[in-house]
Every structure is written in C-alpha cells, then in structure tokens.
Image 1 (tube, helix red, strand yellow):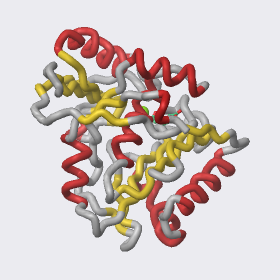
Image 2: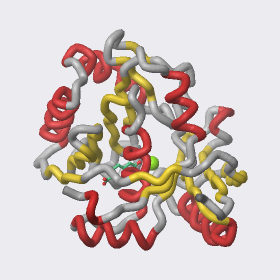
Image 3: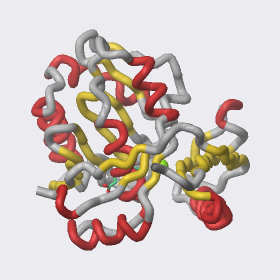
Image 4: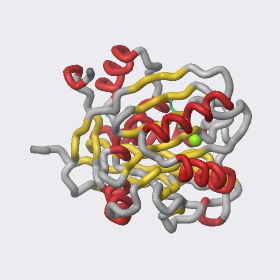
Length: 258
Ligand code: PML
Ligand code: MG
C-alpha cells in the first residue's frame, strides 16, 4: 500500500508569448515526486526550460498538484538500439517496425502524409489505424502525457545494465513510452525530437519494446513527431484520460528482463 503522498509537477516554456497565444514551444517536463523532492524538482524543471537548444523562453509555467489516484508501478519496456547511417534509413526502418507491430501499411502511409502539418503539435497526435484519421480533438496542443516518473537511482542501475547513456532525455522518453504502450487501445508509438541537436528517435510497442533508431532527421531541424497509433474501437476517451491522469512510476527489476 502506498503511504507517501505524491505530487505531479509540470513545466512548459515558450518563446514569443505563451503557447495559447501562439508562442513557439521550447520545452516541457513531467515529474511525479514525494513532497521532500519538490524544491529540487522545480529547480531541475526551471533549468531544463531555461537552457534549451530550441531557444530562450519568455514564458514559463511550472505547477504542482497533489495526486489522489493510487500510483501504479510498472516495468520499463525492453530497449534495443538500431544504428542507422542516415535519416532515410532510419525512417525506412521506423515504417517497417510500425508494420511489424500491427499498423497497416495504408495507415502508415496516411500518417506520414500528415506528419509535416503535425510537426508543430506540442503533445501527441492519436491516430486511428482503422480509419486512418486523427482521433484527438486537441489541435496544436496535442495530448499531454503526464504524471509519470522514473526514480533516478533505479534508472541509473538500469542504464548501466542495458548499456544505454544515463541521461534524463532517455529516462523521460522511455517512461512515457512504457506508460503509453500498456493500454489495450495502444498499438505503436512513433517519436523523434523537436530539438535541433538531437536526432535519435524510436518506435515502441507491446511486442517489440522500445526500439531506438539513431537517425530520424537531419541535425539543425526543429520538426519533431509524436504519434500514438491506436485501435480507435477500444475506448479512446478513457485512453486519453489515463494518459493524462493515471500516475505511473517506473521501477526496473532485473528479473523481469529476458
Ligand atoms: C525528445 O527529445 O523529445 C524525444 C527523444 C526520443 C529519443 C530518446 C532516446 O531514446 O534517445
Ligand atoms: Mg523537445
């Protein structure tokens, strides 16, 4: 039984005004922590938003709130890193992995046609693999997956064991992908960063785990992507509610790794 009270801490930073006033998205962050870590966490999120390769923000919002829902603890998805020689090779592999995870080729094609117009969406786009249509109504905001975290000491142990760089970007991306993939409506996720200095992305799903791909775009570009391919017949609204509200902590146990 969970004894300690946890808090969801969220940050978003933008330039040329707030997001809702058309400002450019710079950075966001989601944490789930006990109260004694509040000061350190708020400072870390402040630092994250202030020192960003997408630019210097002139708007930042940091908020915390007590979480009343019981926290679920889950394993991180298994990780594999695919080295590719170019973004073209990376994108080709990403399409193949999406198909292997169960996304029909026509749906992949339709989604890719719309990726350029979704590159400014701050959160995730939910895309139905049956109708080939976007399901969420969140426009430029996107769906913001929140209330998840991976305590650092456990993450560091995992990173050492799995030969993955121990940085917070990977920690946050894998925590998110692990949360996103567990719901019955989730089929696969496709993601690469909107940061100009980071080109590794991933495809994730229940069967294949978290498949990192070392080049998904050219350095210097600020067009990112986060699409959740979903089975639209399996309760999209409850899925969105879970993504936003269900508190999740990642805790790796060595025995779970095959
Ligand atoms: C992001 O920076 O917004 C997403 C990063 C995804 C890839 C992280 C990794 O596994 O290297
Ligand atoms: Mg970013």
